[in-house]
Image (cartoon, rainbow, N blue to C red; front, side, top):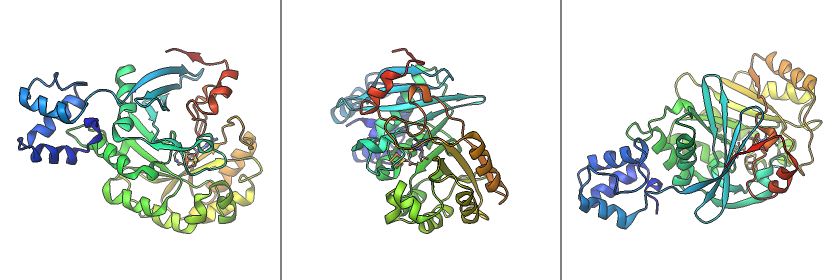
Length: 353
Ligand code: SAH
Ligand code: SF4
């Protein structure tokens, strides 16, 4: 087991169970997350006995290695990581003025099968461990000279289908003695596993993005099968109760699929559904990804859709597609699976590692 798989609380418990002083947990956390230690030998302010004890129980090394980096013509960087069992995942770094957002994966593949998402076509291979979630951030930061400012769980997988490990990683990220990131700079995106939204909110306060993508159940049932289990009304009810950080608003994401969910009627229905809720709406024009049977709407369609929503007093942004030439945009991540072949056809990107 990797020691980064333990949450701060679990590490404290381990330390207590072994009869060590409580502050040892913070000391180990500092070595791992502030000083970049990758072995227990480096932790020179621990006694030799303590180091031996840790070494017999855990590894402290990287949970993955960087296999490849691709850089988009727009500056977006996609990292392919090889996990210790040979499985592969991707993370995407999106540089913008004033912030560098890392989009991390929570699973290898995804079980939820949304019909517009390339990751969904793979099916779920397995959950990521907490150390595999954290190391996407740690390795990209190490490789890019500490540039990451924000983290979004919008890569491969459904974070709430891996809740235990997600929460462990989030606790390590936000604990001031560990990675010490502000919860305001972390966003978890979910397709809407309703009871888990409540469970997540009981354990952490971070930003929540809900992938709504349709304003009516009969349409959402088709493009997001999870809706048959947890319909829109229940999803919204749970989402508005989620404890986002102070002065932050709940976010709803809406992937616009041409002639599927982008009509004026859809916009009005969505406006009625969300009006009065303190939220931000993010419109994501569909990123075309290989075999998926959808098209991106025209710019005019996207703008009319936005205008209708704004007439309801909603705060609506259109998300710029980033990194689509390297299949690094939302919904295009599939690591070595079907996407590999598609990727070969595109040549705009630069492959570095
Ligand atoms: N499983 C989580 C997080 C990963 S998907 C979720 O579904 O929210 C992150 C975002 O990408 C979601 O909002 C999803 O709706 C969107 N997305 C998926 N496929 C897409 C595509 N082909 N084009 C644009 N956005 C897509
Ligand atoms: Fe999974 Fe999210 Fe893709 Fe749906 S959109 S298949 S939940 S990763």
